[in-house]
Image 1: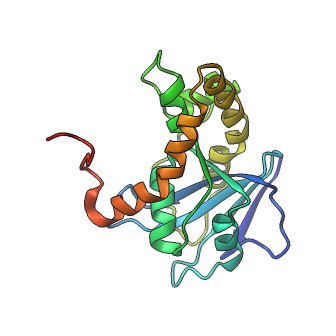
Image 2 (image 1 turned 120 degrees about the vertical axis):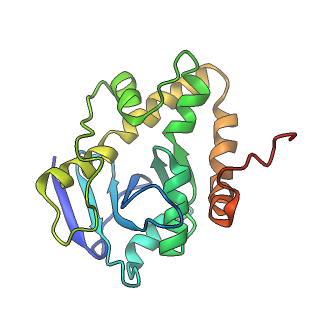
Image 3 (image 1 turned 135 degrees about the vertical axis):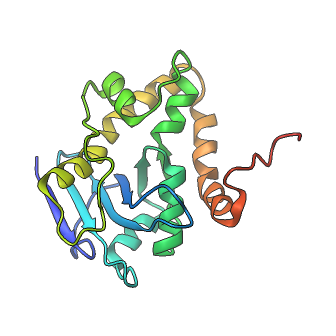
Length: 204
């Protein structure tokens, strides 16, 4: 298992397969204030590729092409936020998407614990450390602890997605989940346009 740190963009010719686990790190969780600093990816092979973005223009054509590729499924946990910051800062719509948080909420109805740490423990049998969650991701040089933390958020997403897919199929909710995933780019655009805290489907 190797963590690869790339400055600015993914290297030419890197093939991460038809299903790619993706996560982002930002300076905070505000879609108005906090810009994306890192994008982490994994092919599910035990390796992680961490792109430390140049926030002066976000010139990363290889990464943008992968995220926008309609033939590659991108696996996220809480895709709503990641898809929004990628659209806002990189200018690309990420699709198609599988969101393990949405899948968890649709099928793990016996619990209200749908954070990545809890889902990873139950579905993939791994313990994730969140010690570096609050960290300066815009630092010029990342620490080994930051790199390991960033990598851990994508290394197990394939196994989690597979486990949740089996549960969704068992409960006849897989098509419902897919419809929710397909809506995520629109949900991201609504968030960025100011409807992030408004339920437009509510009666009141």
